[in-house]
Length: 136
Image 1 (tube, rainbow, N blue to C red):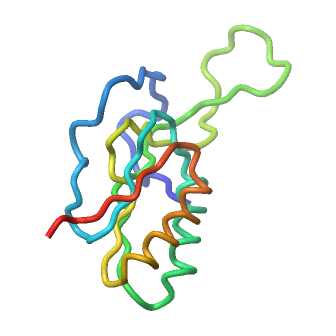
Image 2: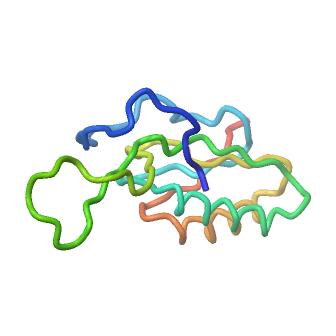
């Protein structure tokens, strides 16, 4: 699964995800993309599940680009732990997605197959998704 090798700070604040994405909203590498329409945290496990679906249907054709990387640590304290005692241990990593962010890009395949692949991959993600293609 996706996990950062090294981080400056082990634990982060939660933060607030609001507004629209400003960077990463246009297709840069491929001809087809998967664009988010809502705000949510995408975990490394969800991203890996979607990647596996795409690779399975892509086989040896085409190329895949993953435009996001889960580097935000999420901490978790165990059940029945009393108040105090500090922040919990890092449980997993997420990427906070805002509306408009391109998540995946594909190239080297026809549009019909790309739509089908992205439909299967979007079932693995917790956000509303839109299929986008490069205007030539």
